[in-house]
Image 1: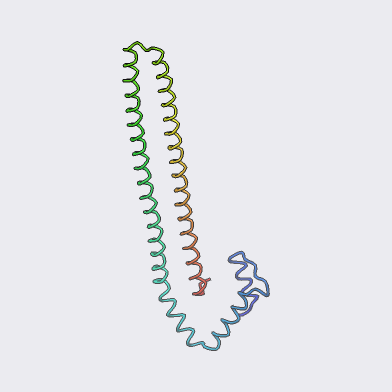
Image 2 (image 1 turned 90 degrees about the vertical axis):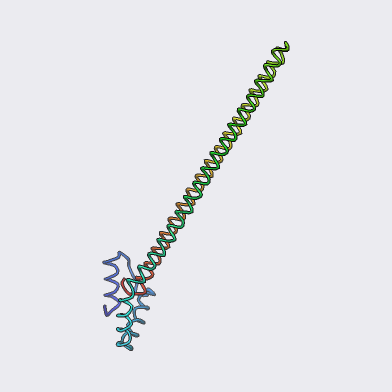
Length: 182
């Protein structure tokens, strides 16, 4: 490609991008062509060396991006497992407390029935019901909070994955631009 118009047609045809006459890319092309004309031999040897090393450099960068993505995925999985273990522990502790509380209330009710305090039994049952409802509400609130936290973590992992993908794409695109493959 020797002229601005040829470059503009090529970019428009192959990439669906329209370049204007005063686009900075065209000025860069003029500068590059001037340098190539001035240092033809040095430039061709440098291009040849770059072409030989480009696949290796791209593979190294791809591996780095893959490693970073795997680190994000592994960290996400570890966080997920930790959160799951914490939820199970909270549920187990809540269940134990609920059973202990229920047992204590039942024992108290039986004592009051045996001593002939029927009115107090009704009061205790109402109090126990209210306590159980409060406890159930607390457990539900905790469960809802854990679900929200899990959803936040998922969005974080998705964001990290998207960021990694976009970053990798930008790195790859930049390499393509600097090696004149585009």
